[in-house]
Image 1 (cartoon, rainbow over the protein chains, first blue to last red):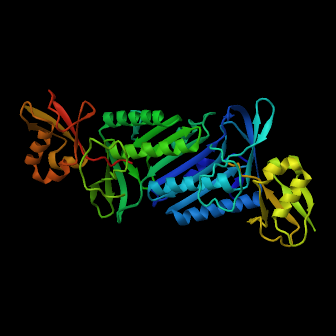
Image 2: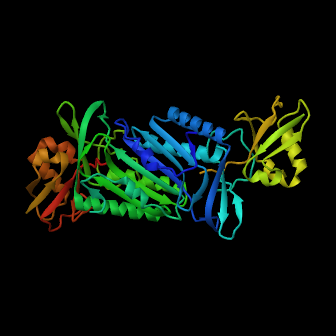
Image 3: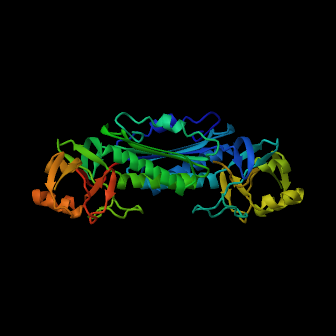
Length: 154
Length: 154
Length: 80
Length: 80
């Protein structure tokens, strides 16, 4: 699996791989675990995925981003398993000639990954309970053939 | 000077400083030196600034960004002096509870820094010539009380 | 015929990791969701927001069920 | 009176790092730009895109010149 891993994400090494004489702009997004969600104190998260499908879908999203935007480089890695507070859950890096493409592509990728890829967050709270997260905010295009649900804004 | 430096920008250390239990999203932008600009081959750049004013203006832009967006952390460092191809010329990091704020604030900051702060790029080309850059694309708000020029889209 | 349904995340508390459901030959994938809702009515609401994947591809709920042993029931994503 | 003008970047080829210009007491900052354009007409175009800073603050071109020794002539930014 190229885009999913159970060990810490080494965004430094990923970022260094983006040095490219054609890239004037590199944008890195790191999604990190907050110690609170919707007013409840969180102790840690655990991520689960339908792994082969999630890995393939992330690869497809990256390929689409490369076509839509003028990217020289692109990467996305999502953590699985237990992630502590302030730990990195997902990283997206985009490198382009100019900054507009790098920002827009980065956001395109993380929105798609969060909304569409079969990865699930299990939140553990300080009161000993746990809950499976929902974070679809349906802001992305390309959101057809999907599911019905009440829209809750993140 | 907090926001200007003549030595390499250590974005790794800067980024590590952004670990915050309230931040669910950290965005890092790195502006890097391309080996070409407008069809000409570049060997390296040199940056010059009106240093005390540039440092103060970056601090003011960051303070404004913290007010406008819900940021937990923010940083911006711009290189001065000689920067090689693929070297980092400027870094902006923003940390917020949610990704929208982190992305929007990041872009707000880099647009303002590029358009308004008295820092100048001296481009050196492979043919031995050099030229002082112009990169104002006037896309930012807060662009009043400024200068007149022909708008050239980046 | 009997289809094996693999469940993820919050669905396991209703159906375990894998459950077999009986559906009629010639029916749509939607009938799997309906069969599951009958097995455990408490899951009725969440099932409305689930998609079905076969061979690592989502299938349209109203498309006719093909000869498959196993389908994957995909609740709404919550990665990132 | 004579005002010292500090020049940056591409402006130095026209005026060096610092140059003195004579302007009338009571005139605006704009008169500094006009005086510079007379000293070196080749710089006329770029001067139209320059701002003036005093005490690390931009001043409006049409505001009246205060008692200053030194102003900073700021060409369009090209950082990043």
